[in-house]
Image (tube, rainbow, N blue to C red; front, side, top):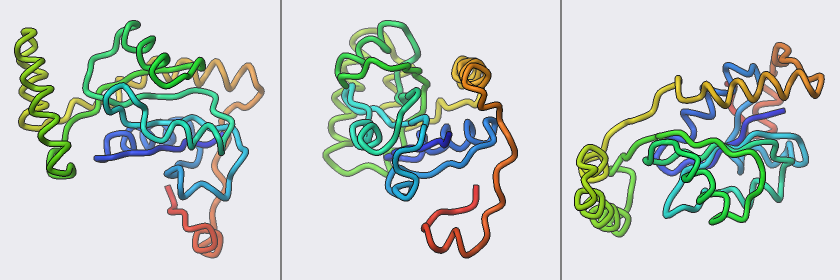
Length: 181
């Protein structure tokens, strides 16, 4: 098992690295893990307009066992169902809050966030509207609790109890373009 991610502003990567450390497995971006194609993986992807970025590519390259969607909306069953439908995904899905780093977004994305902020404010969600408008970090390792419970059950059921990661040599890192995690 490995953890893979696609992150726009760093929040999906942060959660992926937190999870990989707890799971004691390797963690790579989808593009950096191409040499591990076909392996079982958990995918972390950032959400924009109900689309989980990189999920299609990850599903083509890896055997995805679960997906964690990282967005700004708080978790709800309704959110998970909406994301599953919008992404044509019927697998196991978790949702966690990331944040907004406006400095890492282009002009058009910032304008779209301004419209989202106005919509949130008009619905009475001033706190979330402010984070969308000004940027902010909602991430917390504690939001991975449900995912980690799933992981423990999955690893027991599949006889894949976590074992220490293999030590990578500098040659293997250089050959595969991967970084030590």
